[in-house]
Image (cartoon, rainbow, N blue to C red; front, side, top):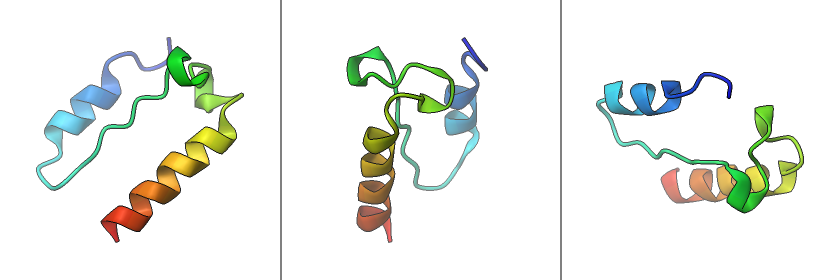
Length: 53
């Protein structure tokens, strides 16, 4: 609903290593700012950081 398509546009524009994380109804994170799935969001972000850094 918010900024539809913009994350994908940014992902395509970045020319360095990148990861597109999709937070949707399958993981109960479809609300604006992933409300209702803060633990899931934190898990995904910290796993990404651990693997990337």
